[in-house]
Length: 544
Image (cartoon, rainbow, N blue to C red; front, side, top):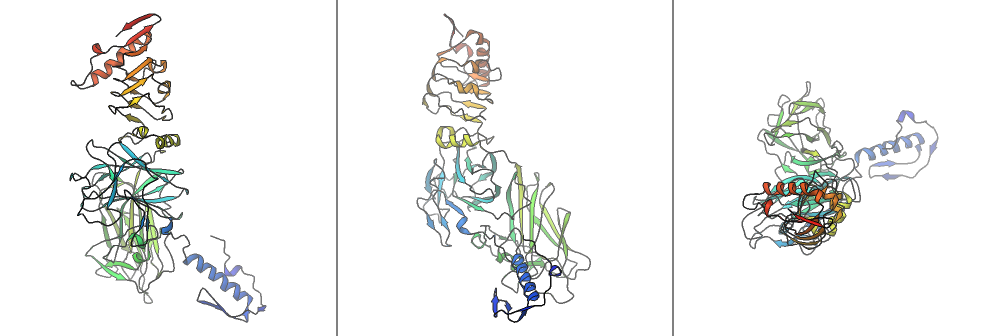
């Protein structure tokens, strides 16, 4: 904010200047003749009012990215919002629509499902490194006719977001505030159950003003737990919010609604709730200062949580002289210094990042000594912090991922990093492709395919590789020295009779076969005695 001198700092001049009468901002009238000092003072006060009572950082729906996943054409909905197809954001999966006879509004009527790969990712470009509000929507609608709504994981970059359960008869929405680190981020659907196919109906990405949610540490993802309004019974839809947020009514018989006697605000809160949310408040049914407001928000009983809590207020009715309203807010019994004195027609906010707690959240608003009026509240937001963010997918990994569906399968559905390749029995032919860029790979399963040619040297240079299973292919040639000399690597080359290794590596080779055979089930285990491989030392050949 620009530095503004106080009126006492002005150098008062007594000269008079002549200016015509005119109106500034429809309410400040300046006429001639006028004292120069008075003109400067009026202009200064006007500037202060503009800076304090306007919010130039309001979001615009033109900046929103709204993706209707699975739709074949882009369209504008009844609220004037533009929904895009997901073409260009993802290259895997198939389109479908909900079962005929199921009536649901766009964008929930179509979806993209992923019947083959373990993990499928949308790539979202982010030219600005700011916080984004991201919402993913899911509506099963029996699109496959199986009446078996799936459960799967939603992942953002290298971090698990949430386990999605789509059994609800209503659309399932999950929302997050996420600070980007690079030029793009990935939103991925990861299969976690063999017979259950992930899908997605919608994906919404909205950039937030830099002043919003400033106490949310950028090194964490913040998951929406509750967003409520008080004093109103209807939902305030995302179309009435500059940042695409939905506000649900909080119902409590101990609270009574108080409607504002104004229709506009002169001041805005840092986290910028929409006007309809602030125009209604709730206070205790028995409206004296001795009554507190007690709020409860549901959380899992046994899980620790750390939260970002934002509470919004305004004095909705001009109070009589001598009346005061002042109260403190506590979260889970801790006050955090949150003291509130609402002002008429001005949005006030207190927010805090809480200490760890467990179970349902309790928020208390209690009048201070000397307050003649009880507490009131207009709205609240509660987010839950996730684990420390992993660095995300390496840029080389992302580039390679986009180039190859094969490498897309290298996402492990448990660790959420590009750490494992599970491609057993996929019918893969030709040589092993070069995915040496995938430096985080720890496990590679490419057994029971039709792979031919030699084992490439890059496999021995993957620094984190600890398991490599290339059994039952058609590989040939010399096994790289870097693989055979790696005592930390579990190596299985069973069923490739054209491979050759040096005799000095025979003990390690036998150990590798036994480690795989004894770890398999009795029905599928391969006996080390049945496994043969040519072992060449100079001109002498041995068999195992």
